[in-house]
Image 1 (cartoon, rainbow, N blue to C red):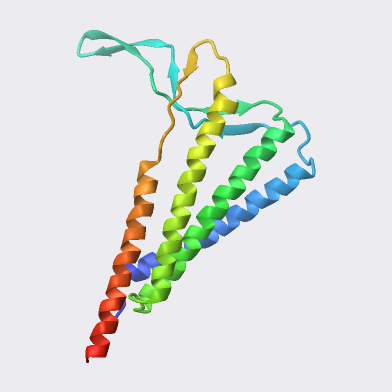
Image 2 (tube, rainbow, N blue to C red; image 1 turned 180 degrees about the vertical axis):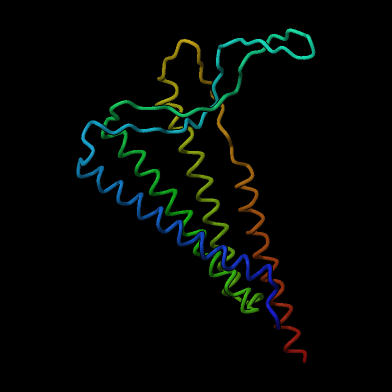
Length: 206
């Protein structure tokens, strides 16, 4: 059987992505080692994306088709810049980076094995079903971690920030797409199980 070109492209693309994520993971690990050895001292300038929405209390003007339209910025997202980042805070964000990169690396590693099996025409087998289940669980774990992280960021940092023209709202992204993808892959693994059972029954009948 000839392997489709699309599968080959996905396979090699996955290989490249996997090794790039490995390099990023090593860089994150090195960064955390330097944090725990106090390499940066008090000179670390840290930029962190705030995961919560904010209302910018700033009105603006839009001139369109000869009309003057009053506008206001709402529901914005931004990055926060910590001057001379405290060590405990830098270590917290460093740990978050390690957890996220580890989950993503595991996801790509499992998908890499899955697509390699597909490339070899090994589709309806127990190994692939287990790989799909592991992908679903990893996606679910990433979703749970993201939800918890968002709430911690709000209650620990965003709620305690004070700006003159910015107010933070208690709204977090729920990453519903990530959860739905996890559930879809979980269901797909059970479809594969039924496919394996039907194949075994067919083989026994023959």
